[in-house]
Image (cartoon, helix red, strand yellow):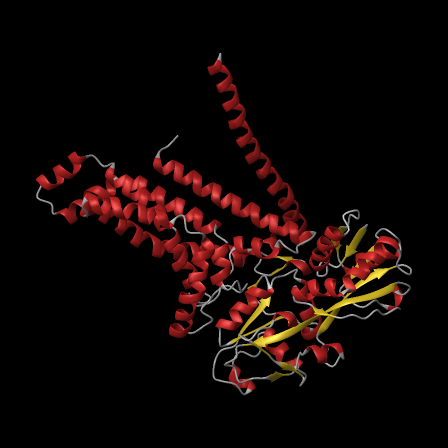
Length: 242
Length: 277
């Protein structure tokens, strides 16, 4: 069985597939990348059995069964000592574009802002650019780290820092701020009040059957959801048909 | 007969080592060079690096690599040389026997540990003392400078010991003090060994990625001072290879090709200076 698509979903699906294959030794799953668009196309024309996408389908891509397996929320985080608890999208954009350089301009302490971003090619960076930056480029002056964990480590130890990571990975050493007044809690994410998340989807051409159904059921089962939650995603247990 | 077999086996082993080097070299250049032509030399040598949107300028990273390397040498050479001189000329054999293995043990500490010490101690210190993000040219230079100490100390020490005793005796006979002997006779005589140690240390600096990624901050902007963040060629490859595809991946191999050329040049210089054929 071949699963292909989003490189952001790929590592999580690989993990689930690993456990799945332990449980069902007879089934071999081959997880491939290629990107969401490639995954959707491959599912449509039958090149893969199950597609993976980290974005919703466009109207031109309708006709697939869409299974939401989890949400990956993106939280903007600062150091707990930072008095700022809320920013607007525009303010965050100004910070990462390099226009806003002191916390004082935002009503915080008088310290230089140290923005931390992810490396070129990162899916999290791509989502952040899409959801917050719009057409604007992230400034070259931002520090760059190559994982959620590394960004978190810098923010946790740098009072002036600001960065973005998956919601599930925020812990007590840093503070997730509210964006446009909405906090990135699981409730707000599930009710779609906090918009800064992307869905992780599995796609099939028709009502899943056989191995594909087994795998999808496993991913949505408490065991599968636990694996996803353990990797920092927000588990959901809902099936939507499109 | 047995000798013959052993000889052939060793020959095959030696050849396979050379073959893998050739293959690696070929692979890196074959993957990287086409992109330089595709993007154009002007693009490749510009300062704008945004490989997912068609800008492949490596200049700021080359400058970053050079700055960090020079900084590390500025830290490593004085301390390394001083350590070697002390060990070779001013210490008893007991101290030598204790200190030298300890210094060499420094080479065995994984770079991630150095990076961690940098994050926990050095970066906050620099941030609180001098301002800026703390993740800086200075932090990377100090940590790398410490990392190359064992190389510089041991090679310089060996070079100093290799200076014939007659040189020292001649110098003392002319009324020179111990310090004058070291500065005016021993260091010039041991020069080629010392320089070789420095160049080997430089090679380690340019190639080091783990510690640098952790403490240099990796901002693409060319640093305005030693308290600013900096990005090196090696860290770019290590940071971005995970998700890179297509031209982006090729651009990272192009960075690798440039790095490869720099290291080869350093090795050639080192070989020339030490007079090894």
